[in-house]
Length: 451
Image 1 (spheres, rainbow, N blue to C red):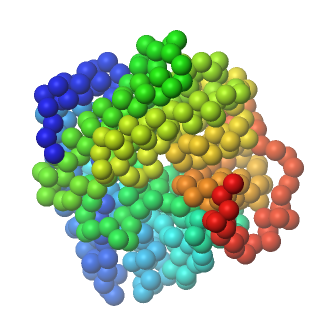
Image 2: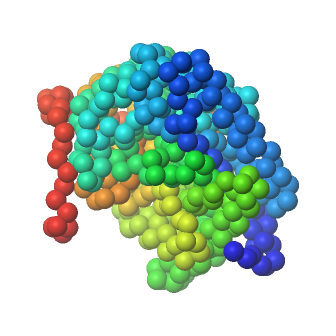
């Protein structure tokens, strides 16, 4: 694929003036060929493979940054779901593999490594159960390892037995880590994509090659700037403006991704066109919605505005590349988006309105702080509510909830760095305990009647 000088210069302008960056380059690595009945050999194989390719990723990404002047914020690795590679190992093997992954990521200077998880939408194997039970210890004893679970899909329905366990597990993780920060490294999904470059949910899925280089771009600042310049046009014209902008962002991301993959001699996977916000001024998805004419995100009209934004981004991205994948939409992480955070503080945005927004956005209830004394079954119910949206509508939804120990609704909490800061959201005091504790598997939805 050829790129013109004008396209390269457009990328430079977006970088200089509108906070455009490559949010992440994520190298997917197959670890099935590392398996050995001797756990020490197994761990050595994992360490050697991850460090070798991790160091190459960091080195080659640095060269690309120098060449184009586009920041690559995170260098990450995703691996084969760990529950699949420890089936024949001893009871504590998942935790041992997690610790070796953490050491390998640190030694290779990789920011995060994902894949400590399981696909349990229809049920749990012995290995899956061991891994799930190990999550509190793993997330409190490692620094760079991220975890995921896929507990539902449109084809399989939703595993309520797994969801029941998650309420207590999240409270346990939170109690073991400062401000519950361990929960920020764990995401639970329905319809999890196997080529997602974003943490905490990234893993190298079945059906992928031995290696796959996936790109996650970030362009809220670029989109906001064009929306600001088009304050008076109607929504049809505004959609066209956003679509053309998403086209440029996607082309820039693919330019960098393909060259990096070529330099590493690994297959190029996908470019994820999700608008990934940060807490920088002007780099907020909420800011785009508000620039479209919504006084504060959460007000009536917010869902429609977000739907228009995401549709235009997807159309522009799909026109720019045949390799769009991952999540590809718009993230609305509360603590990582300064506009979302301000909407929570001002009372414009409730968890119920957030749930409505997730019916049209890229992921779901993301990076939300809730009171530390929230009952475990209520946490499980929130997860079930959100994932049901994905299961019924055939889309990916996910949850990252942080029950912050000792905090109540309205309290402020700072997670630091890219994880941002936020205010603890109020949660309904009414119980759904008897419903959630029924367990079982929620049947898959019928797909022949879509109205």
